[in-house]
Image (cartoon, rainbow, N blue to C red):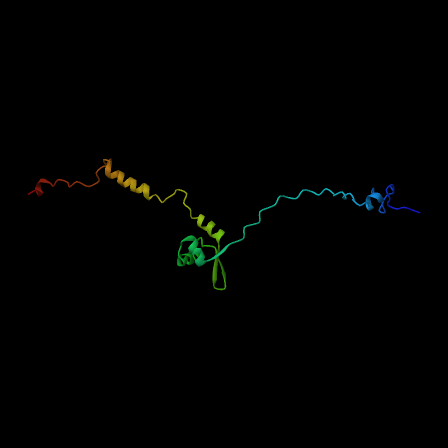
Length: 145
């Protein structure tokens, strides 16, 4: 009588690999070796979904009136980027923020403060400018009365 898969059977398996019949048929089989896989790439954050605002929502977000926003959309120079689907006008929030940032002043103002200080400074300090008013010339002796 032939015993297959018994305790002492050390014959190679049917596929010709290094496992024995005892390995295949034992009650606690050894786990098959896992081939080494390349490491997974780092997880990327999903891109932020584009948020579109209609003019009413954009007016609430920006605190700029709807009529003013419409004017900015139809400007000839540096118009507000927008999309029109049928009669609905929508603006991407990111594009609005970029458009608005393009108007930021680097100097922090339009120079009014410096002009006011210059004018007020001239009032409190003695004037160093020459008197520019023309003095009346003396009349010739023949014209004096």
